[in-house]
Length: 634
Ligand code: 7RM
Image 1 (cartoon, rainbow, N blue to C red):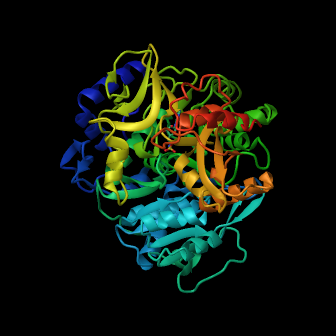
Image 2 (image 1 turned 135 degrees about the vertical axis):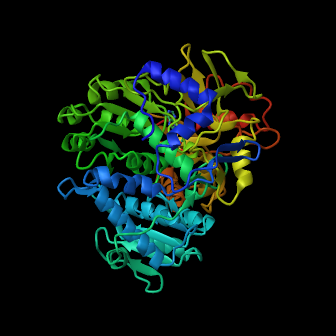
Image 3 (image 1 turned 90 degrees about the vertical axis):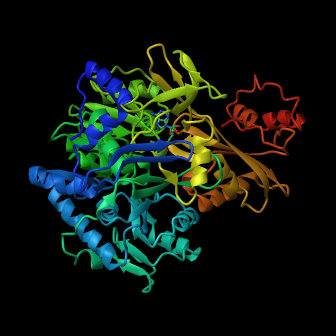
């Protein structure tokens, strides 16, 4: 197992060593894993290309580290606790031995269905054990998984399947979310009908039962094929730099990018960070409420915890079913020791009243975490007092799909915590603040663009099928730096506070969304001429989506029009991208070169129109007043 830091002095000295001798530091961590063959070189890097290789020449299989290596010492320990949507249904538990067998069977099934090393397999599934099993089965045989959050639309799914030329899609028949039953297989059918010609097989896990359309030519039942396989499957030898998975994420341009993570460095960093950030101890029960469709689920439900030999909970349902006490009921029921969730969930539950949290025994909790967006002070205090009872440090963890693992965070009971501060860099992480000219801001009590100046093992290697895009998005803005897209502040003691995105990415309920992506969707409405989307402060979601829309023909019923626009967005991207507010405008403020002045639109959406700055240089200064007049309040 990698090092687990236990005191402030140790953090400080380990941090210093990790910066002074990064290769020696990470080699020592990597030594604690099971490698089929040791690496030749710890690190090679060039941010200009970018080209980053960790542990190259090393051979491993991440599933041998997540499963096989635990069999002897903890084969009978629970690896996954699955908590169903309906609290009255039966909990499922998999020991490491059972999970190993289940993964091997699924891996053999993938092989029978023609999946080979390097092939891409798309997952479009609810939070059921078969999702984790399927993902690990891919890793077992060297297939590359691309998990698509099951809230995305058929269009969005089809785009992702095509971009990665997936050979297979694994899905469920239906998903359960609270009281709703959501068709899933039919969405996959729709996506396939949009021309996903690479897909040879759709493997369907029967989750609820019920009528679905079946195409004998490509559809296969999971249980028909997986259940008859043998529970042993050799682990494919993977180069440390072979692809492990692709995960799509939104950027400031229209099309989501397929962030690529590789086997060796990702394994080392997610395990190391999991052990340290959550201070996980043998026998603890750990729960991250994320969906495996996002990076948080990949790194901190599946790979990090399992590789660390932890017991990890997978929750199928939603925080408010059957009522707003569900999270706390689960913590009580399974005696959860480390709990990791998103600020949007905390705010939503806080708004429902304290009685829901007060009704349960939360004395098992030791560490509580937050991820995905800035946590506001009020939510931080409520989380600290009501959930953590002021005895559980809050780890406000800052990281990204691209970073693979947690980058900046307090370490519980080791470093201090401060509301709204993600605080200190993890060992091996070298954050810097730059000004817009790329000069480093070295002093404290300063604000700047958050960059990283040295590679870390779990960083993205490329964006699938488009390396130039990776270079332009992350490595071109500032020479020899990875640019995060976030702005941050450093306080007098060196703690970091993440302010938020400085690009055209918004964060709605912890879901990352490109404004251009939403605009493209809105523009699909036949009566829309042009649109501009910005984020605005939203009490529960963090940011809401505010859309300014120019129409072609006068709209007779604005309510109907707004519903139609939302429907188009739902169809193009998914319900998570539906605008909260849609304002009809006769024009958009533009620069003389024709660029939309989002800065002004953001201020209007936030009702902060006092200091719009100089608008006289705009192409159409008069439009500003009319946009302000038409602003939507509630
Ligand atoms: C893990 C994840 C990444 C973006 C990132 C930030 C924002 C994430 C925090 C945060 C403030 C945090 N991956 N973000 N964590 N902002 N404090 N603790 O969320 O790729 O989906 O999003 O999320 O803007 O760039 S992500």
